[in-house]
Length: 169
Image 1 (cartoon, rainbow, N blue to C red):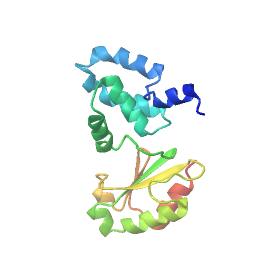
Image 2: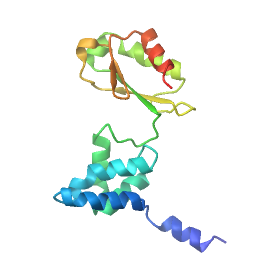
Image 3: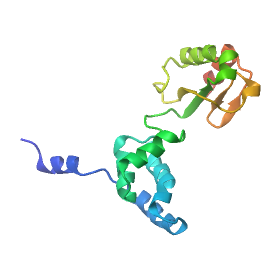
Image 4: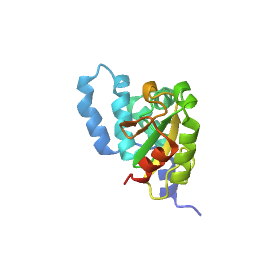
């Protein structure tokens, strides 16, 4: 026999934590409508859900702002700053646009993969790093390049890329 309280809790939709809801209420006066609050709401939800947005977080934001979940998913999937899976403390983005690819981006991706011993979109067991290939980081003059957190690193070689990720805390 199942616990009726547990079943009722499982059926209840996810909600933003009270602190996030209070922060959104404070912001409401600065925005013309609730849809304009979508980006701040997603940031607050992502903070609450340990740096990423599982489906329940996206649905909680949609419910809080009275928006269709598809609209919220569209925004989450459009912006690189929102994550639908866990990420590491350090986020490595390796440019794979044409300039970087012509100058060795595939070797950079492979060297980072080997150094971290995880595949793209996975987090190292210690939670330190995750990496993704990225279509364009806008620094073709320094190809091949990558971005670690908010810092650009260009003119990479496989050894230099490995060394950069090896020394992240």
